[in-house]
Image (cartoon, rainbow, N blue to C red; front, side):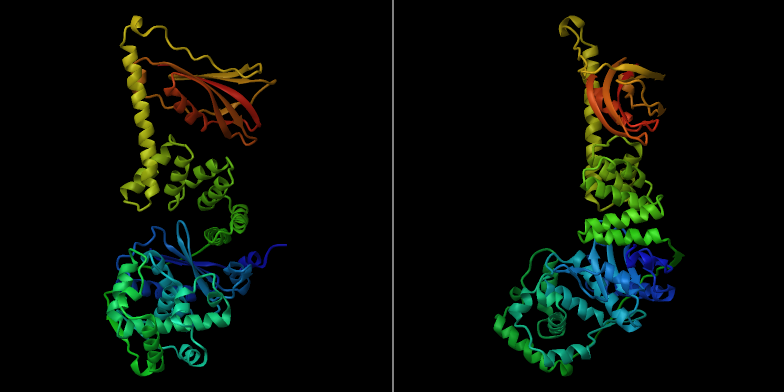
Length: 524
């Protein structure tokens, strides 16, 4: 029986997007448009006001606006083995960030939740030091923002929070500062209500009270180091606690709004229908980002069954396969090279697996570098490819030098005898292409027919030098006709080993699972 969250996909999904956000909604098109407008306004205004130096991720932030309770429960975060009932949350991922929102909330509540979660996004990207009180306090503070065309009004009061602060015992500041994501005050409903309200009030005090300038310097320092608030306010903890308690009693009288005018940037909105598989992949990515590998794998497989042609799913299935040591990861990453957003990331994965000679891999990495990607792995992968190329050129130079040295001075030519396995290999097929010849051997009655031959790269300088070579490999062919593994038996000279194995990995055979021997001759 399918989980309730799977059954919920019978609801229609719509995607509303800009360059910065992708809203996937089962709560309707109009709520999705409203959320996108709110996020764009908040992003442009608050992002410019508070987090000007924040580097945004290269992939758009994805927002899932969930219209049914079952799917929201399925995606809910876990605390002590149990799902937490939330109206929204932020999840930072390796490649993209996510915000999950309940589409059941009233419009005003949904606005506050969206602003709250977007603040977490900015904080996660901007601050090195973001203790829970700071992160949640700022998120609560900015959740009351009122955006009006080209201005933002900050400093709105929350009657619910004020009432809670007057009726519940507040945490001493030492305890407030010690709360983290695993604390009961962060996860248990009643205690969390106190923590959130007090964090909001403390941030309000810092933003609008006597320490506003010191707090601004503290935030700026937190962008580069593990700053300590007390080093900036320069008062003893007990004095700060007493001053804060007095401020709470008079917060209504002392409250003030801050109005900031910003020239909002223009942006465009795109609306389109999307498939169930596209939503399932997003859910799988959220589970993967939160460390729930089993659930991630489950949803990627569902997406693959629903629509097996999605390169995005292939990329993350490749990530999971690589984590499990599954050789199928290679082919999954090759399929993912076609994805416009994840192609360069798939290329990086392939280089890390030793696949340095796939032309598309190099071109995608060079394109990403030309576009000044911030993914450092792209540049490292290009270094690996270039280093390998330099090594091959150096080997070619050595061959040229050896070719120009009189035979009497170098002694007998080096011979590398193939290391034969204790089986009787018999040739069952052979072929020839310009500058290349190949033989296929088997230890049984027959072997799989070669259906797709990819010629190995033969450096022009080696051809000019008349440098010949022979490489012997053992190859594992799968029941799909793919090459699952290549084991080098011998190579003479060594320079041809990488050239031969890289090409053979691209060959395709008749779909018969078997292990064969391949002899590849390089003929100038």
